[in-house]
Length: 211
Image (cartoon, rainbow, N blue to C red):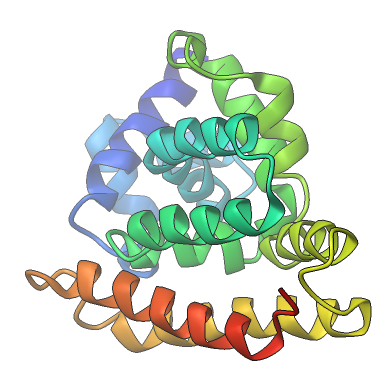
């Protein structure tokens, strides 16, 4: 367990300045003073290790999301606030958020978060393990659909539009995320991207909103 913790922490440190796609097994092993085989004994592959290390970037986001879910009763307010918070965090670390929410292990994110907090229990103090495992156990498309469906129930949208609108929100976000990927580290670009997405979201919602 100590070696697994060390590998996650060292990889997290590398991810602060290096894109996940540029990280190498050998680099991480050298940082930890171990053989590459040690990584494969603790994780399925390099992407699996990077997934665990990337969860550390989510800590404040998870806290914010839990507060939104607990405090917002109106589904429309919840929808816009959740997207605003997601955009603020995602455009600060585009490469990491792309891996977490669109990478090959995205279906395992909820379970990975839950396991992460078993490895680092001290970080769990402000969080609810059940909430994180349940909330993140479906992908971002399904979570958006869930909230949109609730909004349709109370009369904000037509039921027939909910799936399409949910998908449009996610595809718009991912497209913007990719377009800012080369420049998001430049000063002001993360804030610019988050603001632009919220403008697009507002325009989209206003076209289909019933009340």
